[in-house]
Amino acid sequence: MTALGGPRAAVQARPTAAVLDVVIPVYNEEVDLGPCVRRLHAHLSANFPYPFQITIADNASVDDTLKVADGLAGELPGVEVLHLDAKGRGRALSAAWSASSAPVLAYMDVDLSTDLAALLPLVAPLISGHSDLAIGTRLARTSRVVRGAKREVISRAYNLLLRGALAARFSDAQCGFKAIRADVAVELLPLVRDTGWFFDTELLVLAQRAGLRIHEVPVDWVDDPDSRVDIVATALADLRGVGRLGRALLTGALPLADLRAQLGRAPLTAPPAQPAQALPGQALSGQVPVGLPRQLVRFAAVGVASTLAYLLLFVATRGLLGAQPANLVALLATAVANTAANRRLTFGISGRRHAARHHAQGLLAFALGLALTSGALAVLHVVSTVPARPVELAVLVAANLAATVLRFVLLRLGMHHRRT
Image (cartoon, rainbow, N blue to C red; front, side, top):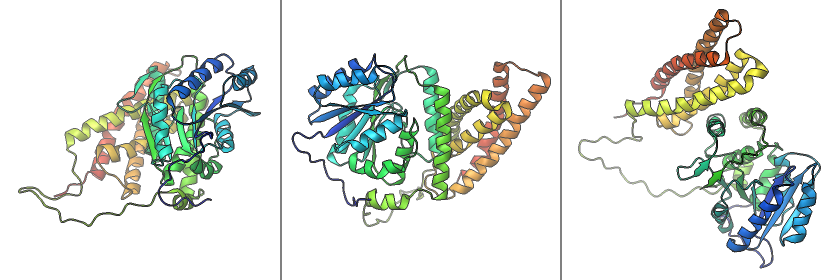
């Protein structure tokens, strides 16, 4: 690895050298490619103050996408084409970023669902050296998003799962609008194994664990109704990726200590401690306790998100695994995320202290919830050999409500700390 200690330097480029390389990964996009690239090129020419390059990364298209891309490269200055013989968005991005000479690398989906006005705010902190990676987020309060309820639920459930299973602190792993400094990409890309849609998540988790600064930009985003992404297949692949990456993190298979030493920012020097002053009638506390009413509200919000994620995973795996195994997989995945979210949001606990005990309590609640939901399913299948899917889901929702009440009691007993 190349030593990169100290603050990041601002990008210094020759007047004619591209400061930014925007990669557009494509597969069978002969219709949309031309209009979208021309629109992006016009926007960058009019609004981006530095030299730029657009790289069309064609990964094994079988239509005329490559021919259209070559035509655009001959028509527009600064447009390059990279052709790969194998599919995979992650594979295309890794190859294009590795071959680029620009100091700042970005990518966006060919449909340009994200408003291009967010591009300069996305890459400016990387150019200045303030941040190392940047992502567009559709989940910020100030983001404006137009998409169907199904995709909204899937996106929020997936990001909730990442927070629980991988301790992710970034808000939106899936938005196709990201950027990275080239010196950081050189170190991280060889460690990213996924070549498909999980590529983004794996890269971000490694960056976070390496102590890198991830800048988030709220975006305006309009869903492409012609998207060809297979939602179920992608969700299952992402779940496998979460499991694989989680195992690698737990077993120490990744050189995180080396990454942090090479890439991580130096810790800030704390100012001298000042003696705390308590107001009359007040007691000093290291943490403001959260009252029961507020805990109930936050627990309910986390519970709604967890239930939606659970139902989504159950429906996605029901046809492949059967009712009981699908229930087990969905409940286990969401139980881990639920405990982590409640630990932070409901009970105001941060840091790793007692985290293992809290998750053990969460798994106990999971086991009881599994008994409730499995028992409810078993009774339903005794009453009706082939129950209707809506009836099956209704029974599971009722059983989950009972399990939720039990979970709150158990977690509050274990996590609620009184301070004087």
